[in-house]
Length: 63
Image (cartoon, rainbow, N blue to C red; front, side, top):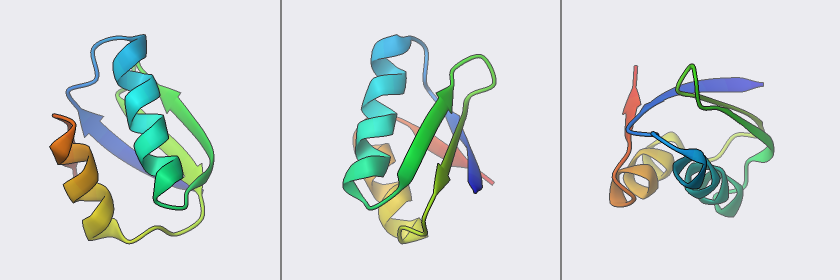
């Protein structure tokens, strides 16, 4: 499982949007922890594609 810290998620709609982005890029078993600002998923979508897609939705992946 991979865990990403994502800034900018403020509500359940944000969490659902981030989850959809990850699933569209090939991630599976995606769970979003809104309180921690984290996404956890299986699979290995392209990291740069994930960053770009989340940025397009107003989120930032934190290293």
